[in-house]
Image (cartoon, rainbow, N blue to C red; front, side):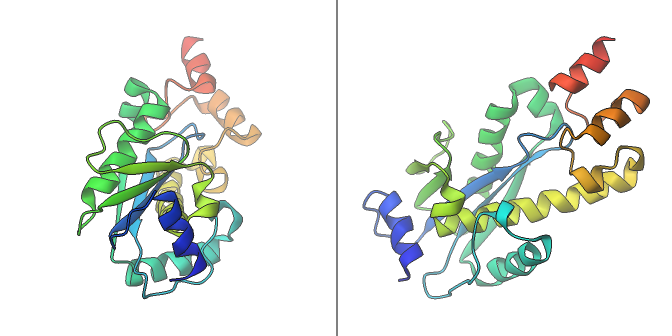
Length: 205
């Protein structure tokens, strides 16, 4: 086992099986689109070089590593919580829901899960442990963060083609100055999160 895998098993509090998954989500901060989660069970015998916090990798590097993760992992899955669920549940609970869905989709199923952050989804049906800054500390969570980021960035390109006036392909839905200015000119589209401050304020006008 590599050093990273030893770290993963330390966070798993004595778990000694092979089906240890990491789960992470992306897209809490943007004003538009779903929140996306990924879960990954890495193969201890298949080293993947270059794993790191997805935010610290270039887009090109993320794409390359994403393909390697999918080809070498024992299992991987991606799930979402929709804009409607975000507005109904709030972003925290929607993020937990997306992570829970990703874990449930794994085949084979995980025997233990490392969850990025300081919370565990309440309905998770498998033993789990939270890992603060897990995408920078645990290899399985790092892999999950990369898959989720690549998936969501691709979806932002899809939305950009549908709603080019907002510049979503550039800012990925985050509340940049350009995004806010576009919102003020065109108003929100159906993919905007109506419960988020900048969008909610426009809807109240």
